[in-house]
Image (cartoon, rainbow, N blue to C red; front, side):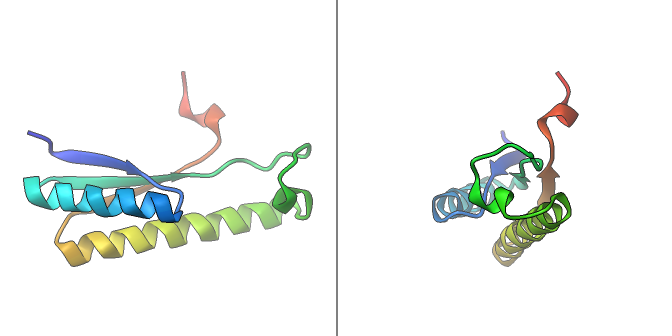
Length: 98
């Protein structure tokens, strides 16, 4: 029935529960998963304290580390469960197309 399950995650505790359920479902129905995490671009004008305190380069490095860490952790969980896992890092909304 389902061959690929898309699981979005931000690495939070709540998202981790969804990841675990998604992996279990994929295993039960012999599907693979695709896990995506999306990061926001750097904005000069923002109320986010982390962005206010960092440069564009620092922001890019931080979100890259977070995305890689999040996706690597999910891929490891999927592998341990015997589920095939693809990962994706979504970027700026402008690059997504209409």
